[in-house]
Image (tube, rainbow, N blue to C red; front, side):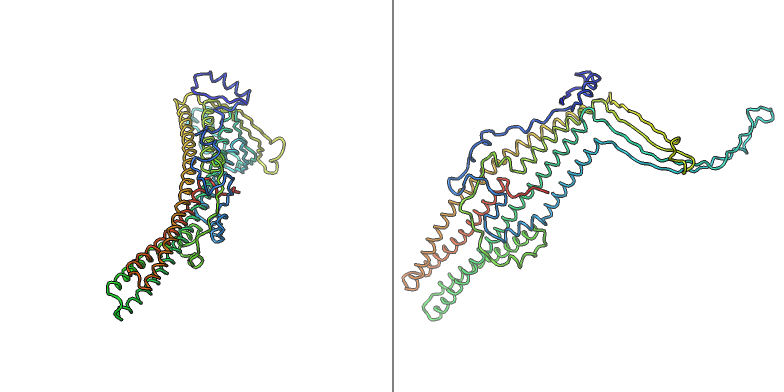
Length: 495
């Protein structure tokens, strides 16, 4: 089969071209040769440019990446989101719609057949009362018209068929375009699953982070309140000054001031997770309100190579399929330059008596080939072809952008993940030092070897270091989630 592309209808005599295509069963328009190669050096490299030296292993990653966090509650939330999230259900509906449109396009290649039946009964008007105004002249041509007989009736039944022969492949190109678009929508669904899994995981990590920091703030405030109470007792006994009470009061209130916004953030995260899983705000409060530790971070994260990432990212697959679809639409419009052949047929029976309807003598048939050629359309078809070519060029540019954005996304995620691991190690060292310092200072304060100011400073540093470590662990987990999303993981093939 040969693919022929027309740029202007005047290049080749259309009659000769139509005859040649009819004989060869051609499909006009450019054949799809695949997507262009984008950033070949980066795409074919063994590793990503920003791959950290520690914390990753160069092996293919599993699609269900969240299982590596070993948190059954997170697994249940993601499964619930996949089953009930409204955005995901909308994407599934769009996929069904695109497949229905493909079925419609495929049906356009087949004949259309319809059945009909009718029973007609009519009475002719009585014209006997009307005579010619010329009767006095004795003209025989003006004699009265005899009245009609009884009611006229007849019955008919049959089949009508029409079939537009796809001589030049315009219908085939339309089917090709619809099939590619359905594949693109399928990839859109996978991309929605990738984004949804990442969004649920990040909201869950935010919730556990906020709950952990809220618990630390509450414990710290309780300990500081105890110290304030003891200091007030000492002041009453004359062994502590007013300034010591005021300093402790200030620290207690500062710690308590962090509790209210954290409690509000916890409720916001609970509502976000409820909506993501297709439930009303507040529906998950009993299930998730109890504070739990953050998910366990895996010791090393499997990271595939750039070519694997580009092949499995759904957004890139969607962009490539839309490029193929727009390329097929060029041929669909080019076919409008050429003649269209339609075969019409009718088979039926007609009789005055329904009992005689199916007799052989009452059978009739009609067959007619119909050739139509829109010879002069004053540039409409040519404009449609040029528009389709422009759409193809736009789709190609969008594909290139998707590839470059994917490479940037993966490298940025790897960079953030690598540096956050190092940052967390530093935060943990700071916490260990702050805890040792606070322990020593409490011992010195009880022994009377240090002031209350020194004790308050070490306690404040200890509290902040604990908060920073929890936040650092949460950020590392969210960077892990972002990395999995950038690799195109988190989707399952749609049924």
